[in-house]
Image (cartoon, rainbow, N blue to C red):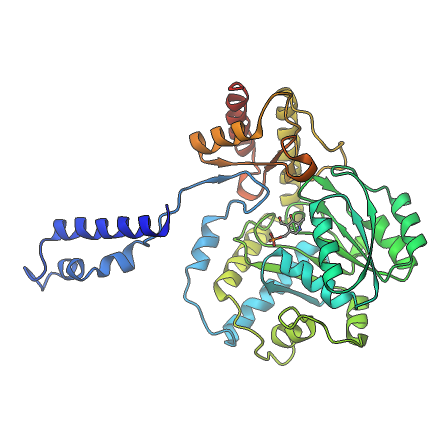
Length: 414
Ligand code: PLP
């Protein structure tokens, strides 16, 4: 429904209400009638916008728990209010748990996952420094592009989309190139490949480089384990494994990376994403930097509370189980997985389309009949795969089985 249609619906509802309560002025002592006359009930009772209810089985955004929506409808406070900073502190503690880190420098940037990516690249790669990107998908390309725009010397180890890097070949390339910073994507959403990154980090540290890991799709659903994997800078989003709406980018920085940041000589060439300035807002003197989106912070805190109640290990195990169930079902439907077992993202499944089957036909059927969103491949994988997210509240036997039942129907349409 577009804005104008929503507005028309709103006016029709208002007219119906007037019809129900009578014309204005007939009984002003009746509060409901009074409010009906002045249109007030629509403002407090029902929002104008009535979005369709979707089942989000795509790579993100994914389903949001009702209590997260409820948290987001709580009254806002000021962005310098002590209550807001208590929310910030609780979020920081929750993020350390899901990231698997003791890094003090952990908070949520106002902006989507790409803001975290740009903060990582612009703060930790100085102009002229060498940024080595392990490139096997769309988001590795985005990191490379950001590196170029921030005037880094970008070198890439290229692999086909859907392929992974072995620790040995990544280490060989890193030792040959001797970069200042190595970047990789832990869960590449364009292909479905997961790489925890321990081997990459070990080689990078031997070469004296810092490690940036994109954890946009892994955080909250798969093991991220920053400390164990030796990652120095990690960023993520809120709209995938954390089951909150998009708009914030969790970021975490190791003490080693922080030391480098503090020793940096050149000015960071973005103001909004300057982590030293952000640190003075979220930590230390609590100095105004920007007006934080308070409501999104409420939502993130609530989603982290949901995760803590379930337990992060249990939540990961639930996603793994749902992944195994969906893979079994997809294979029974004649859909082989693009990525070999052991290298797959649990919460983002990428089955290959059977010959002669169009992803558009499947997606249209699922959306029109069941309001289910799944996405297709793009770039070199356009028309070749589906991208099916089984995350958060949908990562259950029922969630998987509903999707498989709808897919069985859609495949029979060809
Ligand atoms: N990195 C990865 C792996 C992603 O999947 C995405 C988005 O899907 C991004 C970065 C960018 O995040 P956002 O779209 O929230 O800016």
